[in-house]
Image (cartoon, rainbow, N blue to C red):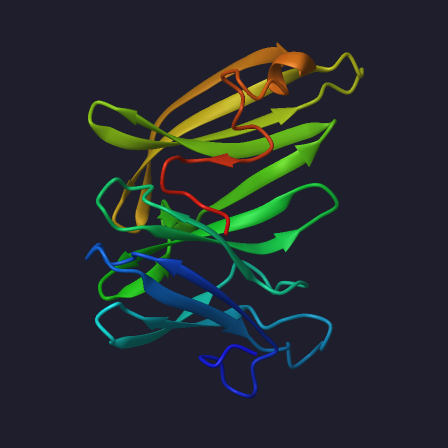
Length: 212
């Protein structure tokens, strides 16, 4: 068990990110406990223990959208907002083919779940032959944009995928809608890792996003 997590923690995950933008690596530890009503599930409230590069410790709590059945993991970090502070991505659930991610951003002295219109915003990452989802970061007008994508295969198995591409900007701990585009593309185009749909099935926010 991680030394930042107490004895009652059921699991813990650790990551490094410059969350406060001071140029130093901060340690982020996320830990949870078993649900009191069903020990096969975890409680929806998870604990964050942060040690800033300055040596200060910052404990806080986050409330997940639902009680997870799997341990919540820190999976990536990157400067999505373009302000020099790195955001932290956590995986809070997954199915047979798609992982569900949430984003944490530094605001008011703590790491907080990023929201859209006041509601915690989730991201689907990866998929199967029937659907794909992911996101990437793109710079435009001297601002960093977060582009999420979703493609759903048609029920006639023609493997032409209606897709939706949504453009957001992160401001503090809030994601703001910019624009939405839709279209249809064949499976080969959706799966092309060098094409415009490379963000399907994964996360692409270079250069700072990492999966170590």
